[in-house]
View: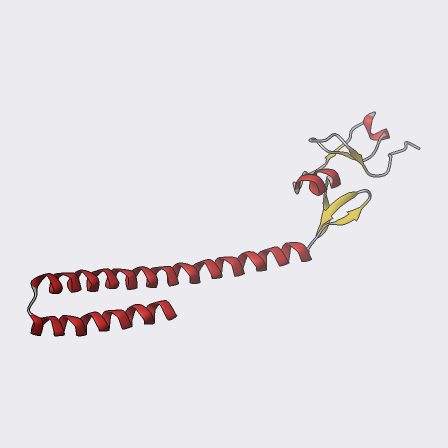
Length: 135
């Protein structure tokens, strides 16, 4: 990173100034240079930590993008008026999924309500499926 190399260069300059200060002999000058070197060292450490955090954040973003691509690729299919995801063993409410992204499993309707369809959403109470007819 450019920041780290710049800080390293500043530390080297501070070291050279410290050597020059030995020749000058002013105590205040040396104290200020020591403070500068300490601050630059701390800044270099913080920059390295930020570089690690950035790498971790990029990895997390990559994982989330892959997960989103898998989810988008395995979208729901419409089956008998309801959604299925991969298999036809469970049916889900289209309204709840489309509006709020919630996968709500549909409940089977018992007689006499099965005249209205096969399933009902327990959340929005919408019915799905072909009506059941006796004989």
